[in-house]
Structure formats: C-alpha cells, structure tokens
Length: 354
Image 1 (spheres, one colour):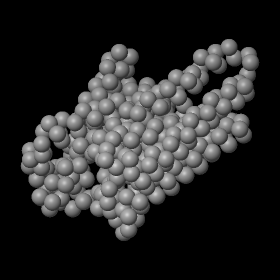
Image 2 (tube, helix red, strand yellow):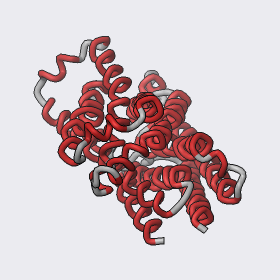
Image 3 (spheres, helix red, strand yellow):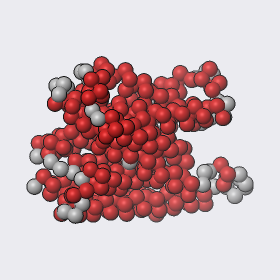
C-alpha cells in the first residue's frame, strides 16, 4: 500500500508539470511562428536535456544500454518513441487550434484509452479476461465517454463564440480555425502520444538493469529509459520543425529582437515536460513494486490528473471567457467523468494487488 500511495503522489506531481508545460506558450507574441517556439522546445526536450542529464545522473549508462537486448528493448523503445514524438508535435499544433483546456482534455483523454489498452494487450494480455482487467476496461470506457463529452463542449464553445462575433466582420470565420480540424488533431495527437506508454513497457528492462545490476537509485535510474524514448522522439519532432522552418522561411526569426524570450519560454516548457516524464517513471516504478497492471492503470491515472491541471490553466487564462453556460457545463461534466474513470482504474489496481 505504501508503494501505491507513493506512486500516486509521484503521478500527481508529474501531472502538475505535464498539465502546465503548454502554459508558457501563451506568453509568446501572437506573431511568433509555431515552429520558432516549438522547434527549440523539441530540441531541448528530446536532445539537450536528456543528453546532458542522463550521463551525469545514471551510473554506467553506456554499459546499461549495451547489456540490454537491442531488438527486444532498444529498437522498439526508439520506434514507439518516434511515434510519441509525432504525437507531441501535433499536440503543440492543437494548442494553437483549440486552446489549452480542450487540447489537454482530448489529447490526454485519448492517451488514457490507448495508453491503457495497448500496454495491457502487449505486455499483460493474460490479465485482460480477469476481474482487474474487466475493471480496467470499465475505467477506460468511462474515460472515453469523458473525452467525447469534452469534444462536445468544444463544439458548443465554438458555436457560442462565433455567435458573439460582429456580423460586419466577413473574415471572422477565416480567422478562427475550424473546430473539427482542431478536434481531430487533438484526438490523433493523443493516440500517437499514447505510444509513450508502449515505449515505457519496452524500455522497462533498462530501468531494472540500472537499479538491480548497477545500483542506481530509482530517481536516477528513471532517466535511463526516459532518455532512450526521447531520442526516438527527436527524429520525428525535430525533423518536422526543421522542415517547417525551411518551408516557411522562418529561420530568420532566431536573429530578430525578442528571440531570447521565445527561447526562454521553450526552455521552461521543456523542463516542465521532461519533469513530468521523469516523475511518471518514478510513479511507475513504485506501482510496479505494488503488483501487476502498473502500466495499464498508472499511465491513465497520470493523464487524468494532467487533464484536470490543464483545464484549470485553461479557465484561468480566459479560454472559456464568453463561452455559453452549456459549453462550460459540458466541459465540467467531461472532467468529472475522467475523475470517475480514474477512481475505477484505482480500484482495478487495488484488485490486482489483492
């Protein structure tokens, strides 16, 4: 039980970071191109921070990587890390389309569903047709309804805000991104981001070897698997941003006045993002000590906490200002359903321990 509580606390702390990392982007100038902010962010997240910290914190990091199975551990960790990188990239796009609160709700909600079911089917398939497995799927189903309700809230919000726009502005429909495109990107980004949970499952032997063979403490060992997954994500996320910077001819923005603020915002976002992943792995380590289903249960719990934090920030920054009462009621209902889903998932973990 002690490991379960400690794991939950790590998950909560990580969710605060994960639900907050997009907030600094709100302080970038409106005319800052997407790739000028998110390009440095992905560079910090996937290369700079892990390459600097991992060798400093993890004892015998190179030996750990050399001793794990390449085809069964390293390659799938990198591949699913690459898919996660695509998801993180599209999450950044969804912030611009539909705002923090709705983007977090859809992305993290989709991660709850796929981040729970994929690891269960891949790593613990024998648990699916058991009572903990049934309860886990029930919790995921409740969360899925919560995601649908949040999507409905976004559509109602968009309609209510459009109805308040001055009729004399013929370009208003052009200025506001199409909500259905934003919703689609939000859900798709969540499906791809959920590949991090699969990558975490494949990378788990890296953390085990770091602790059991080389005597690293859990807090240091967590950086070994995280770094491997992030390097996989660098291929997709950084490459896309390089393509966008070249296609849109926006490299010159890095030489303009005010770029220091953009880089600072990107760095703060990266620290919060990687802090969330680090705390997620610490929480998963503790849940694994408590028994089975540590990934199918732990990952959606982490994401649900992050949805709540992200929506708090969305309301605080005025994203729902002027929206209809009905749309606000729907988003609150969606969050409540996600909380209920987390409670059901917590019950599934308790049953797995019993």
